[in-house]
Amino acid sequence: MLNELKTYLSSQESNDMHPSEIVSILKELNEDDFEEAIQLVPKEFIGDIALALPDRYFGDIIESLEMEDLTEAVNELESDDRVDFMQELQEHDEDVASELFETLDKEDQVEITKLQKYEDNQAGAYMQTELFTAYESEIVEDVVKEFAKLKKSNELENVHNLFITREDNRLHYSIALEDLLIFDFKKSMQENIEESDDNFEPIIALDTDDIKEVVRLFEEYDLSVIPIVNQYNILIGRITSDDIYDIISEQATEQMYHLAGVDDEAEEDEEIIKAGKKRASWLGLNLLTAILASIVIGLFADTLESIVALAILMPIVASMGGNAGTQTLTVVVRQLALGDISQNDATRIIKKELGISLLNGILFAIIMGIIASLWFDNGILLGVVIALSMLINLLMAGFFGATIPLVLKKMDVDPAIGSTVILTTVTDIVGFFSFLGLATIILL
Image (tube, rainbow, N blue to C red):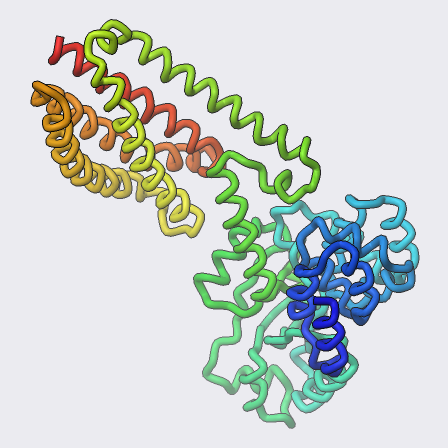
């Protein structure tokens, strides 16, 4: 694979190279070849590559480079990625991060410090400060020439829109570059806008807005970029679609981990003890719920001793309820995350899931009732017991699978956190209690 990297680098012009191609090759290298490979990579790509690779590679990249190489790597990054790089470096080695910070231009230092003040969930933490702007009074021809100059000097990347501001830098309009091309180049921006039938009012986000709201705006209005303003409507940055894709991916991963009862940050860390502790906390909670289920079983010890077949069939009821509940839970949690469920949708969702659970409950109750009747001697009553129990448990699984995340959302708690543990407890206890309780009433 090292030879493959050498071949790729030698066969491509610098402008034709893409960090993702290099990342794909680097992932396949063993530890001994990785350090040599990093030395071969053009330094202008190092920053993007370090952020694109899994976190476990970051330390190896830092340790294989000189300070001047790190400085060049950071200078090549866009402002939002520069902050991400510095934050990750600070977590890895504070001394190296401080030394690197001092090598940067004062303007870049101020920018990094300003962006680091935002909370992780705020839009400002994800914005780029590189902007293509013009005043209302500027002539279109001059604006286009300025844009060409910025592109040639590589000061702007991934540009979709021109942001028009007043003299006090308050955002007024947002114009797609394709619309700019049909403007009269001899007139001012304001004159062209007034003469056009199009609406150039921008969809904006505050720097303090929750990033989830920004993601919703991108999806709802099919945006490629959104301007970020402060409370005075002064333009301070932008968020582009490539950043939104990363955020959506991170949120989906976080949600998946939460449903499994693990911490996404801990799992990305290479420390076994740290990840183990996080998992152990959830496993400990699961142990408590399992003990509760066992206590329920213990209440019917005499029934189990009298009818051994119950011990054979009992796991089926709990398993079917657990799986049915997980299906409902996953659907509702995901729809909540996508914004497909409004605050007034609770009744509709619960009715829908109860309907699905009822249909499946009747189907599998009949199937399992017949199987139990044929499996065991004198099993007709046993078939009735497991059929009724399965119907009850699947109904409860559907109800609680929909209700738990809706209640957590109402409480402003991530619906994925703890939902699985609560649901498993409910389906196990309801399943065991209904099955053994009905068996005690009907069979004894």
